[in-house]
Amino acid sequence: QVQLQESGPGLVKPSQTLSLTCTVSGGSISSGGYYWSWIRQHPGKGLEWIGYIYYSGSTYYNPSLKSRVTISVDTSKNQFSLKLSSVTAADTAVYYCARARSLAYYFDYWGQGTLVTVSS
Amino acid sequence: SYVLTQPPSVSVAPGQTARITCGGNNIGSKSVHWYQQKPGQAPVLVVYDDSDRPSGIPERFSGSNSGNTATLTISRVEAGDEADYYCQVWDSSSDHRDVVFGGGTKLTVL
Image (cartoon, rainbow over all chains, first blue to last red; front, side):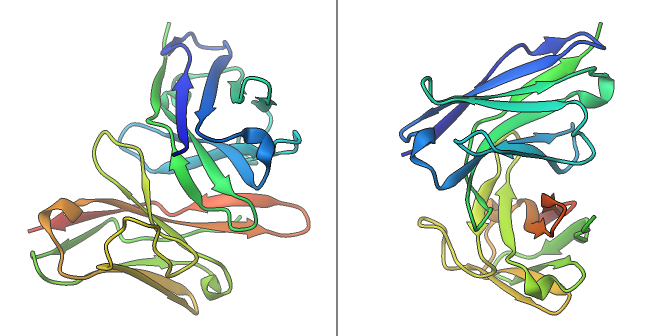
């Protein structure tokens, strides 16, 4: 059973960089066949795709966030990470990591989510 | 960018059938996926590729997709089905590859 777990600071100051890591267990990122993704949900709102990475390092980002987002992968640790720069209060959200099947692009496994609040 | 439109809310009595729509330009040419999200929980995939169900999802959940509308149908609705439901597609072309979510529909079981 694949499991994903987000970790990182729950509070980030405005203008700083939000950094989260997703640790994958029960399956190897290096095995291929999946896109490892970040999705966020503003309080009381819908889901917003942030971007994803393939084990090879290929990335795709939401155009609306592309200038501030970096997703990276560490196959040796079976982890992938999100960095979102120059954050404002509008970036306060629950951040989920999830696995998407390549070619099909649906998310079959999700982390539990972690709330990140941007505040001074 | 591609837009998916869902009704904000749908209400249904227990035992009845709920239909949640997801509108998009020629959405019938895309594969549509549906997620259920209960308060405080991560979304759960309930239908993928228009009409397939992951293991463990009851047969009461079904999907269809044609023209400009995809539909998630929940038969014999139970109180435990009360949740937010999101549709999702993969929108790709020569210059972009985006995941798109609908705005979500809150299903209320009366």
